[in-house]
Image (cartoon, rainbow, N blue to C red):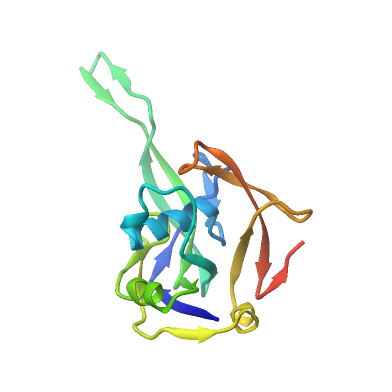
Length: 187
């Protein structure tokens, strides 16, 4: 039996690990192991000294649509303009495909853990991507959880796995997983 909390918010952007400064990037539609671990550590700070995921057993992420938004950034390097006696950084415009109205379900094996989580906000990745909890805790079995609409990266290495990034909580070890959409593996 799972105890499931539901979070929702106005928008979210999950930067793919392959995107460095791409001019156009769509939000990743799933959470990697290090993102889930980061969310868990925010919800349960007593786990900050532990490596791994201990309380969140499953998750599902869905959204209403993707909207392309422009963001102004500054380049890393500085440019010296001796004539004008200025030191400036060039400006770039990036387009990001942002998730509109994301909904995240987090499943726990213990009701107490779900209750602690249901009283806190979380961020999908960036500080501005706040999603707020519903106070209600859903009880469902694995079959019912699989029927929830959304994307879930199942963690681990299988014949359907692909590389999803480097784990910032575990010495940048590579992370693998396979994608399930509404409980079905996506090939």
